[in-house]
Length: 201
Image (cartoon, rainbow, N blue to C red; front, side, top):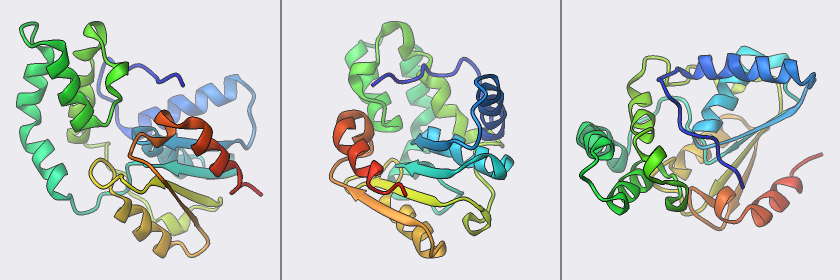
């Protein structure tokens, strides 16, 4: 599975949503099923908010959600991120240590991190500090079907409890819990995608 490269500058989620809309228009894709994982799930949600009539189904996979109470892990991550960012950018820090920081703090698979792109992930850690990072919407207001797909071991990065909260808020939503961590879609795509397909009408 191919992952997108980290951003070169800080954007808010609405910026990404508008860029996605331009891409879909250029490809002449009408009313697609939109699926996003982790930060991409936030982008997909922002797209659904800004272009509610342009989606057939919204699928969120271990996704960032509307602003909710941070768990202990998230509080710790945001507190230490200035130091982590400094270490990631430093040319004196071994790559293996940078990989550990990025993997733990951002949920990026270690095998996707290398010397050329490691410092770019420092920007990803700063995005939550951007005023446009947090989603502001009521999930019940979304007109399209909402599918929530979460790894049962995703308790830190995008806690599964948040998926359960949204599922309870939106009675028509579907919640699929997979066996795996935050990166289940990347780690075991065949299993994850096959289970997601079963949800589709």
